[in-house]
Image (cartoon, rainbow, N blue to C red; front, top):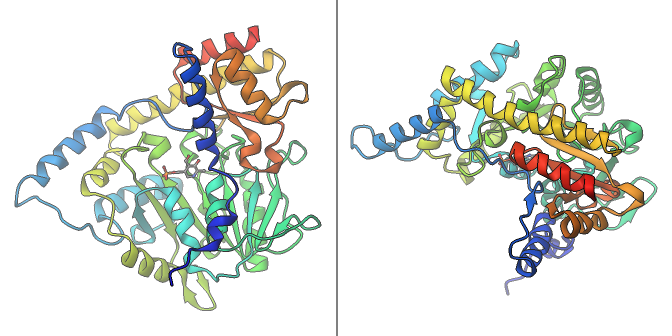
Length: 404
Ligand code: PLP
């Protein structure tokens, strides 16, 4: 008799953004002309840059002629894209990552969940709190959640690492040694970036205890401060203990096109077994490749024109981020992030809970943000705004918050 996977029953409530969406739907049904400003979900709003669009059009035409048609893509991605990534994202920064250490995929969300499969089922997994919910929920689905032990802040196999004002939202090493450590910098939701020294300390720690760091660098393109690391592979020894996830979603607006990649050095071995070889096996078996048209679009991100155009887009978002941060500070709010990431992490005023502040902003200022508590217990009392709106909307949002 078929049985369900009971782990799914342990997932808490509905996914954060579904709850936000439901509340917004209900509000809009009651207030049809409310003129809501949506600074909640972390989706980009600018269209695909012209140079990238052109590359896609060309690729579409190629698909229509027998001699240029492309069927199944190579397992690990087309050579042209992997070479462009290795060259532009790593070699130019002095990092030695080879094209065959890059696995092209349909995005970072699926990769950072699926990667768990190649590790022991009983792995102890450390995540930040607050955290991008996907790391937690995918581990719950895999059976790693259970009863909570307050002493070590651990739910069965899942260790929560508090990221608070007092540690500058960069986690301290947990009390119990984890096997896998999820880190994401620049961070979603706090918008905080990590210094090279702090990241190096995490790499040294992972090497010492034999853990693997699962490093999500989906927002590296938003780093303004030249001293900050764009990749964990800038740290010495990371090739022996880290896997990095990258995405074309936030740097080039591919959230609807879907393209990302995972980097695993061939030097990463566990009990003498190559992690690279295991992921190659998994990728080849369960994934049939990102579309040719989208991989050509990804290649165009690295063309001189494409690169210039996406940098302009990012600058537009970061102009919003800077404006929101400065204006909120001027209005008396305590604000974090927003300098090297498209997220503003603000402390709710007057001791309001995250959801109370969400309701207040929605009902009285007609602004949608994301309650910090949805990202984990330590997100309570915080609120996330994104810089992905238009500049005009960001200005209007601040106006409304001021009158509030
Ligand atoms: N990682 C983080 C930290 C994110 O915030 C997001 C999306 O919001 C993703 C990964 C998803 O990336 P992708 O669109 O490539 O799946």
